[in-house]
Length: 291
Ligand code: BTN
Image 1: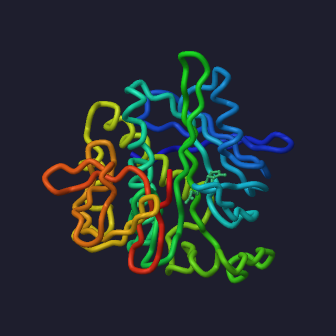
Image 2: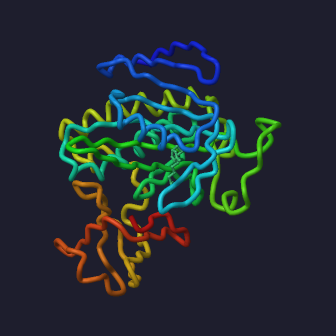
C-alpha cells in the first residue's frame, strides 16, 4: 500500500507525517531548510525520547559527511539528505548489517523510480555503473543501557543546472565519481519527498524482517553487485585479490582469495574470508574503506 502524506507549515520547517500502513506507528518527519548534518540532528533526537522512526530531511546540509570522515556534498535541493532514528531491539552485535538492509531498500527505491541500473556496492554505496549515486552512513550513540542509530541516506537527485537553474555545480572531485538520478535517465519522480517516501516504504518492512531474524544475505538478495567477480582488497598494508562470493550472516563480504597474501588475522572458513573492514576496489574504483 502506498504511504499517505500530510503536510503543514511552521516558520522555518514544515512537518510531514507519513502513515505507513505496514508500520505500527505514525512516523514524524521534519523537513529543515538547512542543518549541519541530518545525522547530527537525529543523533541528538536519539538522546531524548524521540520515537524510533523519527526522520529528518534537509534541503541542504552545511557539513554533510560520508564514511571515513569524507565530506558529503549536500547543496540546496540537490538530493535527498535524510536520516532516520532506529532503536533496534535486536543484539548490538548484529547492528553492523543494518546499513546493508537500508542500502538494499534505497537501491530498490531508486530502481522503482526509474533508475533501474542501481546496484549496491559493499559496504553501502549506491552505484550506477562505475559512478556513485548515493550512500548510507549509520552512526551509533549510547547512554547507559540505551543505544540508538542514525541511519543517514544521501541520494543525488539533480546534478547540474539543467533541472534547477539556481543549482550549485558539484566540486570536480565529486563530479568525477558521482552521478545523480537526473543524469541517469528519466526518473519518474525527482522531488525530495517522493524519493524519501520511496525509500522509507521499503526500509521499514525490510528493517522489521531483519529484526524478526531474516538473514542479511536473504534481505539483500541480488542487489549486491560483483558476486562472482574478482576484486582487489586492501587490508592494512596488504593487497590481495579474490572472488566475491556473497554476504555473511552479519553482512560481511565473503571473498575467496585468489592472489596475494591476505592477513592471517582474517578468519577463513572453507577457503572464504569474511571481510568486515578494509578497502575493496571494484575495477579501478575503490568504494569500501577502513571502518
Ligand atoms: C557515504 O557514501 O560515504 C555515505 C554518505 C551518507 C550521506 C548522508 S546525507 C544524510 C546524512 N547526513 C550526513 O551528513 N550524511 C548522511
